[in-house]
Image 1 (cartoon, rainbow, N blue to C red):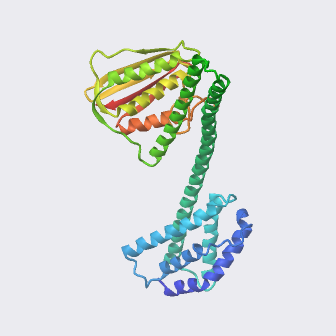
Image 2 (cartoon, rainbow, N blue to C red):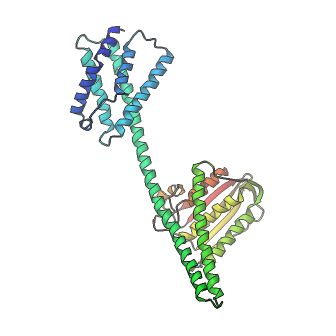
Image 3 (cartoon, helix red, strand yellow):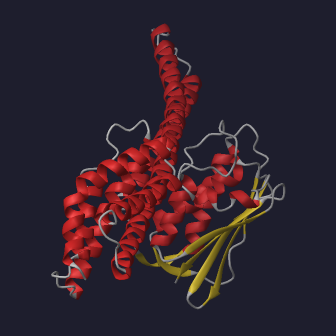
Length: 384
């Protein structure tokens, strides 16, 4: 390959860059507002790489080719990422920049003498590789930007929901404590109504429990993000007893509701079901699922526990509530999402996400079977 071609290209780089900028700004709408179109750490360096590719004195070893490829990818990333940051730029305009560059290079080098077929092929292949690198990184940057924007939107929505959810029990708790204090102060003779105080304290404890649950969810989500969700496996746990305790606790909560016509059914299996699990975490999953069934309209809730194989057990919570649309059934296991679509419904949208993470940490799986208006059945499986 003629060395003079590489030398001539190196000498003409300033003129090529100037001609490329002028033509690109004239023919690419998004380029017109850019003060300096040429990125000094990408396009000029790419040109020097092309000089090397045309220089027959450079040994084209495997190591050298690998270095050139890595360097080309680096420069493509610089160029693609920079153009992607400009809202006016499209991938077609980015590609057109390289087409213009290729033509400008040919025009500059062939002013004195025509290029040989091998030299033209080297330039064409180099430009094609450069545009592929830049376009790949341009697309990747745009996709990451969209994901980041969606994440920020989800975060902002979550913070809004969280502040509302935390404010509600705090306001109620403050009101209850103020009422208790007022009752005590106004009854200096010691004739304070014990029943009134008892009810006020009970309501205060309920609000504290709500706050505790919210804080625990926030701590859990933080642990998941840090990869530090604690799972303390205990051997030989009787799941019949565990599920029965959770159901009984849920029944007591239901009985305190103003509308207590909710029925919780749980039939004990005919034989014991024993597994190595974290009973606290599995109980948390059960409470989340039963709480959701109650929240989303279930009046009849059936809980079932069974051994489906020598190595696996299955627990399900089924309600006859309003159900979940097919398009939402995958979404609800994401963080900050809810089983319902009403943004005014209570909850941080973390329960199912945390439950899913707990089941995964146990080596199990969770899914939902539902149709809109026909209730929902949440099923999770755990290894024995």
